[in-house]
Image (tube, rainbow, N blue to C red):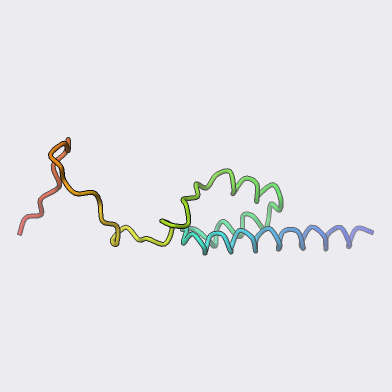
Length: 87
């Protein structure tokens, strides 16, 4: 009877890890390998912990890289001046 419980636990761990992997890739999140291993080893509890720990932006902005982001135009109300790079 006990080997079947082990098979079920491994299957549940794989299913949770696959779900974690897909979501990490969809949002281009960092640390995918570590999170997938964490979720696999801890199963449902690891999956719940991973979902509660990570912050998920909307998919509309998830694909935008920081270098591609264009901020708002200056309107004179800025508190800090932009950093000036010396040439």
